[in-house]
Image (cartoon, rainbow, N blue to C red; front, top):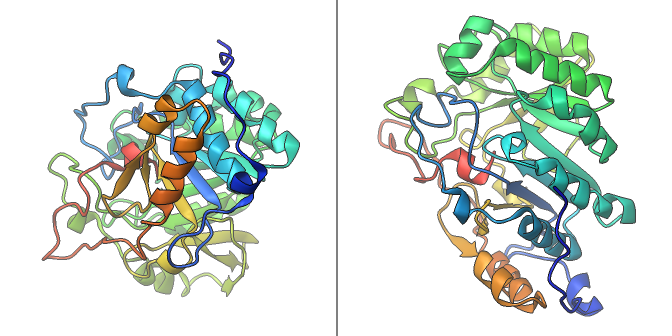
Length: 350
C-alpha cells in the first residue's frame, strides 16, 4: 500500500506555520505522541482488561489523515514525533505511514521520529524502521522471567520480544527498556534489569503505575510501588549519579556507575513532571488530549475533514493548546482507588 495523494489544499502562510504552539503557562509544545491504533497483541495487567472492546476500524483515521495531522504539528514547530498504540506495529500498513513521515527528517523540520513498542513485531520491522531514520525506540519489558512475562502480558511471547530487541540493535537502533514497577510482581528484578541493560547497552526507565481505565478486577493500589522508595533501595547497592540528560519526555535520569548505563524514573504520582510538560497526545480517531491525566480533549477529525486548506485544523489545534492544564489529576491511595480517567492507556498511548 502507498499513501494516496492528499486532497489538494492551500499551504498555510509562513506566518501561521512559523508561530509556535505555546500553552497558557508558557510551555512550548515540541513533542507529539500519536496512537496509531488502540489495538494490541498483549493484554498487560496494568494496562487493560483481558477481554477488551476496541474501536471499530471505521472510526480510525486513515494513514493519509494521520500523516496530514502530524505534518500540521510539525509545521507548528513540533520537533519530536513518537508513534504509540496499543501496539503501533500491529496497525496494517503502518510502515507506509512511517516512510511518509520520515520525509520531515530529510528536510530537517522533524528532529526525531520514534516509537514505543512491546517488541512483538520488531524482528520483521527493525531494518525498515532504521531505513526510515528511526534511531531510537522504547520497548516495554517489565521482567526477564519468561513465566512472569506471560503472567504480566497475558498473551505475550518472551522469546519473540527478545528476538525483536536483538533485531533492533543489529539494525543500529538504540533501544531503551521501559519497565512498569509492580509491587509484588517485578520488584525483586530491578537489580537484574539494571545489570542486563548495562551488559546489552540499553538504557532503562522505571515507570509508576498510572490510574487509567478499568483493568478487569485488578487493583492498582495493590500494584502501585512508589519509585521514591525504589530509588532509595537501589542506591544502597548501586552508585547513582545525577545527570542532566533528557530525551524530551518526562523521565529523570541518573547514571549507574557500575554499568555505565542510564536509569530513568517516570514518577507521575510521587513527583509529577507537569511543570516542564511539552507534550500532547493524539489518538487514532483524531482526538487531541492536552494532558494524559485529564479528560479534556479536542476533536481534530472534524476540522481535518471539513477544510482541505488546513485553516480550520490549525485554528482547532491552537485553541486546544490554549486549554492545556497546568498538571494532571493522578492519585492512588485508599481514597482514590478508581481510575483517574476512564480511558485506557492504549487509547492515547504511553
